[in-house]
Amino acid sequence: MGVAESPPHAHDIARGLSVDWLPPAPMSRAVLDRLIPDAPPGDPTRVLLWCTGRGDLDRLPRRTSWTWEEARADRPARPAAARRRAHRRRRAAATAGRRASERMPPVRARAG
Image 1 (tube, rainbow, N blue to C red):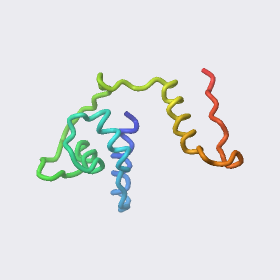
Image 2: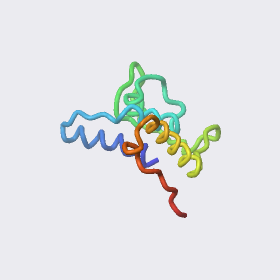
Image 3: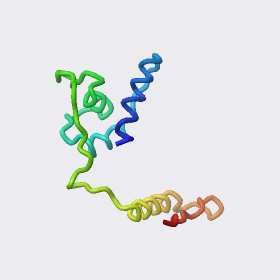
Image 4: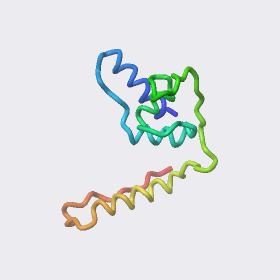
């Protein structure tokens, strides 16, 4: 939920400093998918700001309250071991075809 809180608050701070900044779309989409399943379709950044009461969205009234759904039963969080395996696969795919001297060092599992 910290990821869900950071972009809207960073947007508030940026607006207070007159800086034109919006949360990144991939992060906004991940927050919407995980914590706000009833979000309307549209640009994920604008939808996230609307869902948290920070903007207007098409013809929908501005939200004044909302709640997070901390986890969805149909999409449980992946265990740490599965995240590490996925990271290793992505890293191996990214380094495939490079000479040995150009490859990244292997990822080592952390103890504990």
